[in-house]
Length: 118
Length: 109
Image 1: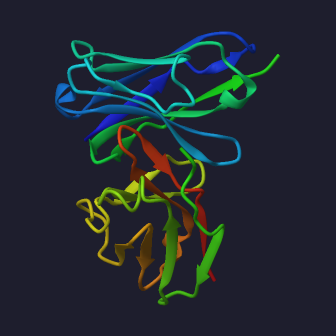
Image 2: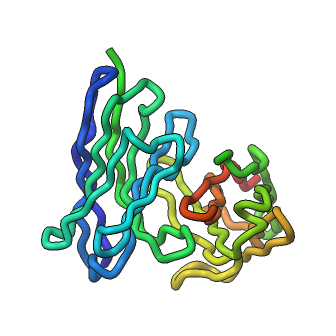
């Protein structure tokens, strides 16, 4: 059974930084793209970043380039999201999602809540 | 990249069909046959229901079907059941990125 377990969320002040982690199990981790997707309090879904199987290729929407960095450690079956210069509008549940190609995400974690507030 | 446009709500009685639209542009929905649909129940993570416009992952009932014409994709749920009541989101490949729809709440009357 595929499992994705996120951690690292919490309350952070504006301008602060956070590192989210996602531990994967139940599939051959280094064969798949991995992604982060967030859901705002208004329930909008937004793709945040993606990373290729070997970790050499990363993808971001233009709106988040420069503040967010995705990485992975295939020896630990873990994908990370480093989020810097956080703003109130970054407040969301952050999901880790396994890619199946063509921007489809066929397994999701339970999510970790990030709240940016003073 | 702007969000894909979905109607805020849709409804139908048990046994009926409901169709949800997802409108994008020639840079996303219209450019690729990589449209996906997700079902989300309250407090749960999204679940992939359709990928590549009309393909169903293993375990998804064949009551769920997808299609696309031009810049608009559609999800049809036939034979509505109580457990189909949920939020539904579309997504599309958009070059080197992905874009989601605004979401549709489906109510089973």
